[in-house]
Image 1 (tube, rainbow, N blue to C red):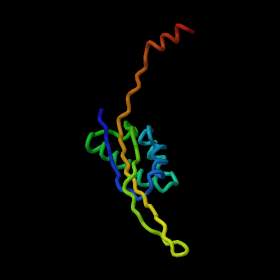
Image 2: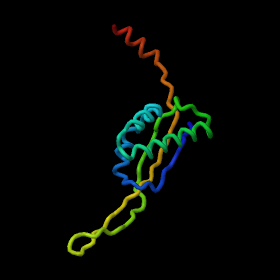
Image 3: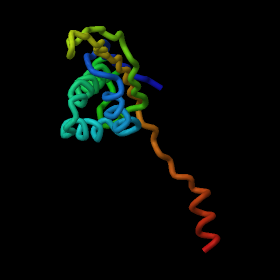
Image 4: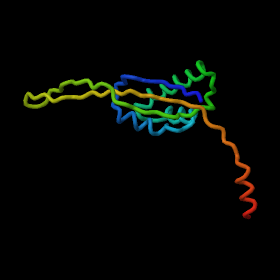
Length: 128
């Protein structure tokens, strides 16, 4: 089974915010995930949408897979390096500011074909 991956590293957004978006599209069909991301008001939706489009392009170009046959098998967000800054505050104090970054990993896989089990349908008919 072919798996298609795409990665986005060093996104200047906290991983907690990006995970909210990742959780919404995990396990969904690609077409449904694209629809959700395109209308989502969260700021993290745009980079995830671009990453998903990149993964679909990888699938088409490298493996000749159609978008209709793909689903979001895995998507996980890890924390990247934290940029440490200082913010001036009252009475001459300075407080630390931690600007977080994210690494997003996206894996697409083809959907399994559902096959009807004839034995189950026969058992149902016998019981009725």
